[in-house]
Length: 306
Length: 234
Image (cartoon, rainbow over all chains, first blue to last red; front, side):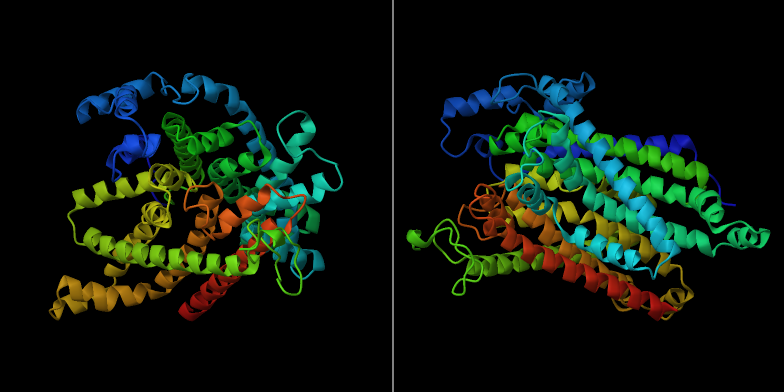
């Protein structure tokens, strides 16, 4: 029996990773070739504008002061002020974050509703035509980038037959297309992981005992195989959640969904660096948090396997 | 460039139709394919070389340095998806070189971690000890003995990095981050086509189909290779 890692080990891991992530984000602006002000303002900026920007971002101070200010601001949740919109970044994020969360949660639900049953079915009856079709479809969907599926859905479902809205967040209808766009890729991953995990369980000895005991196939699947396969499935879902957030940038742009992904995209187009930095930090730190929770769960149930 | 022919649907003469500037879309897609191939190869070769070199250094470093190194790699790997690449590409001047650079910086950490762990595992095998006893120096051990043992994994990483780079490059150019408006990159073509989705859907669909086929083929190649390498071990 391998030794369990201490929870404090995992916490320190997460802490160190957070620290390095923040340093990396801090360095990107300052270490790129060329002037940061030029990247943000463009080549035709007047010296006065550059000076103002330098003051605003704190770039005219020595590095250690900048570092201190950076961490100090982050600790107070002060994410800076938007260059183009002149409002505090944290306000902008606060009003848009719930939309992204809603979208992500529904995407995960869709992915799980389609992925888990089909995956279970695939592992149970691999030669059924449904299994073969869904297996092929899953690889197909994994190769389809979200920025292609999105416009495709819009063409299919909104333009010629106005069934579903394709822009903004006006009614609860409008969540369908973006959620499916995000959920399809994730659904394919969940499908493959579910079928692999359940197939793995089907080989185990406790299943042979269950059959020898006389359990029906249904009982075996639901009460013996699925609970044991649930752990890898759950871990995969939580990890995919992070990739989902990153992919939300593209999807929210396509569907004009008012979340932090489209906020980041608008900020990138208008070179509004404080917003981009803030969104990247938020999403990444959230991902670090999810990884920490995943590691903790893994450590609790499968000791020594990290 | 013939603006009178702009936005034509696919026809016999121009298999994928015409783009908004009156040029044949098929030719632009092929140019985009060349661009994607160039970017993918540059990034993959750089990433693989960097990761093999860094795992060599990692292996022959003292423990403290190894721990420090592991932390940095974990830090880089903590960025989900394309976020770090988006951050970098938005700051660098808009060109294909920036995208290549951003993708290298995003992608070096994964293979490095994999190869470092593999190197450490392989080095515990008895045959490495025997070779060291017969007088080989570190460089020779790594190049002639450890790397060949890892060759299957290296190949898998190469295929994975190529497909991931093609996808990421399309994603970044879709967001507008790399390349002048004339750039034939597939992501840009899809983005430009989005504005004309009603009148000219072929502008978005055609490059997308190419992208899907390429990724699908690479993915298939990778999974078949993985099966093959697993069977070989047994």
